[in-house]
Image 1 (cartoon, helix red, strand yellow):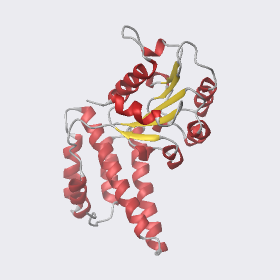
Image 2 (cartoon, helix red, strand yellow):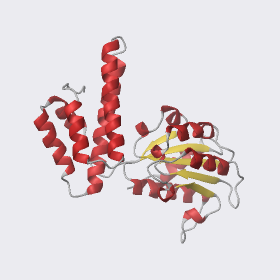
Image 3 (spheres, rainbow, N blue to C red):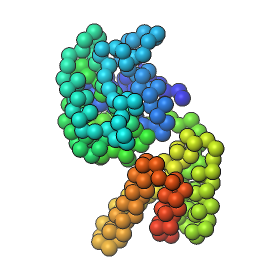
Length: 256
C-alpha cells in the first residue's frame, strides 16, 4: 500500500505541536505499518530496531488487548503517559491500534485528551472504519482514510441486490462470501457489508425525521446490524449470523 506520509505529516503540522489522528484501513497489518512509518517519520527514528523501544513511543497494540475490548483502565494508563515530557526526542507519540475495540466508557475517558493533546504529543488511533467509533471521538481527530488495495467483493451494487431479492437469493449471496478460502478476505467483505448497510440505514434515518413509526423501525434495523457485528466479533458462527441478518432485513431498494 502506497501512502504519502509527507502529506499526512503536513496535515498534522497545521495543528501546531500536537495532534490527534485516526487512520482507517480494513487490514490491521496495514494499520500497524502506517502507524509505525508515521511514528518513524515524526521522530526521525533509524531502522534496525522496533520503534516501540523508543522511550518517546507508547501505546496499546494488539498484543496488549486482553479479551475482545480495550478497557477503561488501559486508557487511564495511556492518558497518564501522555502527560509525561518527551524523553529523548522533540515529540512523543501515543498509538492505539484497533481503537474501535475501546469500550464506550474507555472512549469517553479519552475524549478530553484527544481534543487537547499535551504539548509536543501526537496521538495516532487506527480503526477498520470511523463508524465503529463514537461520533465524539471522530470529531476530535483528523480522519485519514487509507487507500485500499483491492476492489471489495461487497460494494453498493451488491448491497442493492441483497436488499431487493428474496431470502433464498440472499442466502446464496452470503454463501458466496463465507466460502472464500482467504479468511482475511472473508472478514474484509463481511466488514464491508456491515458498514454499507449501516451507512444506508443511517441515511434513511435522516430522511424519516417526521415519521416516528418509521424512525423506530429504522432504529431497530440499525440495532440488528450492530448486534450482528458484535456477534461476529465474538466468534459466533459466521454463516448463521449472516443468515439471521438476512432473514430480518426488510426488502427495499438502496438509494443511488
